[in-house]
Amino acid sequence: MYKPYWLFYLFIVFLATNFFSCKDDFENYSDNPQDLLTFSVDTLSFDTVLTTVNSPVLSFCVYNRNSKPLLISSVQLAEGTNSDFKINVDGIAGSSFENVEILAKDSLYIFVDVKPKENGEYTPTLLNDYIIFETHNIQQKVVLEAYGQDVYTWRGAILSADSVLDNRKPYLIYDSLVIEKDVTVEIGEGCVFYMYNDAQLIVNGTIKVKGSLEKPVIFRGSRTDYMVTIPYDLIPGQWGGIRFASESYDNELENVRIRNGKYGMNLDVCDDPLRSKLYMKNVVLTNVTGTLLQAVNCNITAENCEFSNAKDVVLYLIGGKCRFTHCTIANYYPYNPQLGWINSGNETLTLSNTFMNLNTGEQEYYPVISAEFFNSIIYSSTSAAISIQTMSADTIIPYLFQNCLLPNKETNNPQVVDCLFQVNPLFQKTDPNDPVKNTWYPSFDFRLKEDSPAKDAANLEIAAQIPYDLNGFNRLADGHPDLGAYEYYEEEQ
Image (cartoon, rainbow, N blue to C red; front, side, top):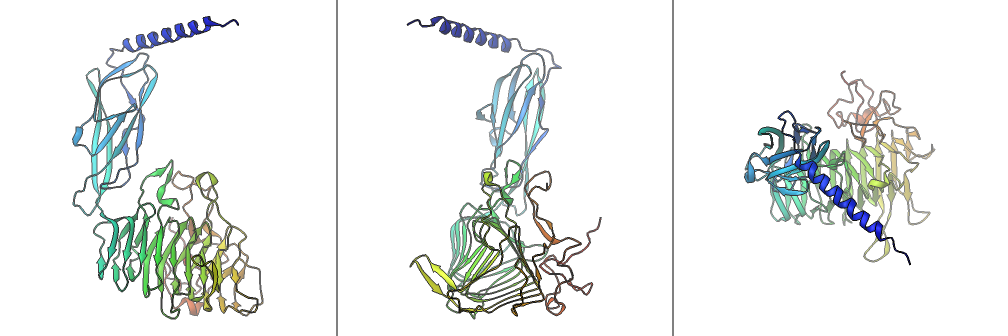
């Protein structure tokens, strides 16, 4: 059979011709001192980077916009090997490079990362360096800068004695932070907990978290970089969550922000549903890839709290006793399958007296002592309604919704008093396609718009018990308090 060997030889000639022509191009370097480099950035800036932790890798482009190739005699970090920064030039890592070639009208990438050293400082410390490019004996610089934040690094930490945690430095938690039984831990205002992937806070004893309006306590993921243009601090599933064991009681959370876990808070089965399990005031619990808050046979009180955005149920309350006053319970979990955001469409609120024990595979019965909701908003971007689940048709769950905005159809049920039904509460921002700070991903804002039906709809007597909203505004100022955790106010222009 005829074989076209001539094609093979032609291919070899083509490669050789192109190889040597490229070589000729590179050897024909410009010697004009006006032929210099240009850069895609003047300064490459990192967000705050935790000490001892590798930063994300950022990059910029170096361009030769001239008509001849350039020979960059050196590319180096000004601080050399002592720099906190590391660079990679066109695929090769190091701190200093010589004779870097770049074709006419071509470019190359410079990749940069930083790993700050511990410095003993409580506040973030500015780190900076320069990448120096020398061409024709002329130096050009790109500035590198980052803020390094010292942290307390805890791996599988166990607190076995009463403790007070201060806010001098953030806490970086690997694996878990466990509070043992009969141990009380107080967490002061302004404490920040950076939770590494899958890390959990497990409370077998008691926590008293006392943030302030100006300095809330924060539990969040440890990543400070971006997924393309989306800050990881907006992405759910960054860490585990907070679990309160069965024997844990008398927990208090005030002015706390908990976000972006795989679940929010899981309260295990309690033996004494009349004893306080968890008291929350001015708490924002938001944005998880599972259920936001699940409690079995527990006693929970929540005031001025926002519970928002879960792939599954926002509040799943099984048995026990609960009271929610001036709370915003909202599920606008975004839909973006490419990035893993898929709203399951489950109920925003589920009240139940049955619990599936995964260890035994059996349904367990826990009676609801009372479930009360006052001056609150319960709403979802889907058609999901409040679900009442009972073990049998003749079982009654003693619930009460008074002066609430509900997703359900209107009813004459005496357990539902002075409520609004199936009306959009008109929150400030719930549209995932509404850009914020030049990114497409939403920064949700569950404050009310001026024409919200939740305005002026709260019970005044109940509101007087909690006169200031989650942001510290007086909800009694105009004599007509609003539903939910946020009182409407006109922002100054």
